[in-house]
Length: 159
Ligand SMILES: [Zn+2]
Image 1 (cartoon, rainbow, N blue to C red):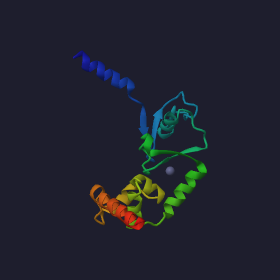
Image 2: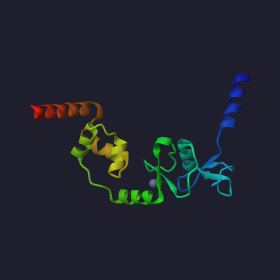
Image 3: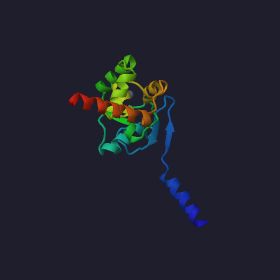
Image 4: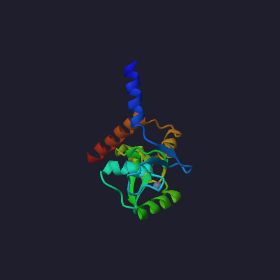
């Protein structure tokens, strides 16, 4: 089967040389990279961000994993920040800003997404989702009802 073997060899060529470090970070072989370690490997999240923004990162530019999973290097999970911003972000996360069911509901009605709300309160997305579902909130149906209620309140306030 010539086709399959062509596919396989192409696949092999495209395969990146990566490994997981013990601390959860993914390393990618990229000896050409100016900030690669002596081994020729560089942090994959930094390479991914460079690809996303189309330039090299400065050493003082840090990458934060929004969902706190260090090997999740999907572009949408990566946030570029200075070392200082990154430190204060983690300090804030540790303390966390208090939230409750009603505030989160209001944010959802305002059109914020769970990841945005989680970021705002320095929590994991799953923590916020759990907070809502454990109180019987199911996104699509209940949110629609909440939006309608909010709109009718606004309408009656206008009258
Ligand atoms: Zn971080």
